[in-house]
Length: 217
Ligand code: G3P
Image (cartoon, rainbow, N blue to C red):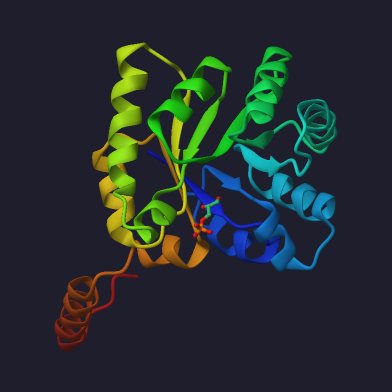
């Protein structure tokens, strides 16, 4: 499973990228607003750091304007993936942009039927929002499982990008359900490596090693 960072902040992305484990980045207008940076400057900086897909979201709501914005964003760098919302206009824009060779991420997906339409529109990625479904008492992970089944039934190449991921259990369950990608807030990305038994075990190993008076180098 690929791991993307869900952030538009080049500084917080830089520290995670240093691990060599970041496969891509997803941004959205809310994340962009938090940075206080000009969107194109932030995207350019992120694309220089991350060789994989960097999603940049359009803000127009009609298909023709989405296509124009998408083409403009795609000029920033060759690894920009144009992100469009899952609306009729967004699907039209996805079909047009993917037909011209752009990679497209269709976002704000909350149902299997929406995901089916996005795949038919040639989406590179579909972004089901797990946490926001859980927030309203639905089962976000069930959506991932159903999309996986539908895409496998018809050999759709669209990758399932699990988004709105809020805690480590979401990552574990998305991986078990066969999501192709998980996009994580940077703090959660770091949290994945932590386990109290790892810390406790390491402290004991180091304590015992100290008693030997040896050093490896
Ligand atoms: O990329 C968008 C998505 O991950 C949003 O997450 O936590 O705002 O629902 P959240």
